[in-house]
Image: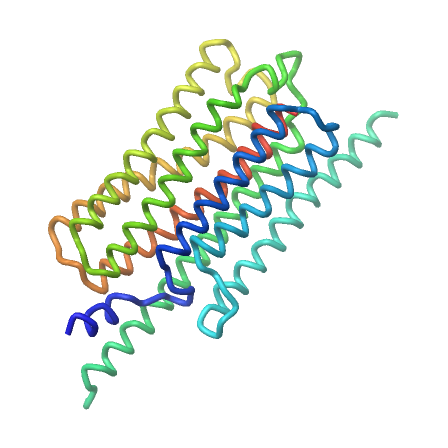
Length: 113
Length: 198
């Protein structure tokens, strides 16, 4: 009966199953990426460009760590719609951010004359 | 009208997962809201109107502590979801209370930082860069504060009602919202604080 109950109380809503292992993995990876990013900037022994690239990559790595291990987003048939909406949102976000920067940098350049 | 209990349950959980998908769509639109604020910040961050640059204003250890509080709260929320799946209401409440405390620590630290900056004369009206900073970080802080109020209300609901599919669905919404806020914070600390300090 208890088994029956837990099945009822465990809908996943199109995400992977949440387990202690997945949460611990997510926490561990996020901590590593966060500490790495802060120490790279704190120690400041690399060139500025390298630091920028490194902390950007660490942020993207942490994004995926949290989306996969905390949100449990995946490409299974049940989770496909969630993931599709997520990919679409990422595209819009990239267009918005890089489009704005592109336009403003161009305007800056043209206004300098 | 010969639905068996099982069919009814399937129907219920199907409509629940459509509801959760709807909430997920809201989260994605919130992502776009934050993207516009990030774009504004990226464009304006160097327009300090003669004031100090962000590098001179921020303390990295302080931001690191904020980050750890928010990350820990994301984890403790996950623990309360696991307790929910096991049907242990007291554990759910305890982990949620822990999440509220960690989230509150984050918000208090952020407000303290804002007050500190404001009293030193770096207000939101002192330059375009400061406006963009307060809008971006403040919007995130406002989301966290609303999440905290929502979580306290959920704890009251848990005291009053038993665990049910309805409570599971509500906790799923809040969990999505909370995890999303932690994800946005990754980009706030990377783009605003770390890139500002380089």
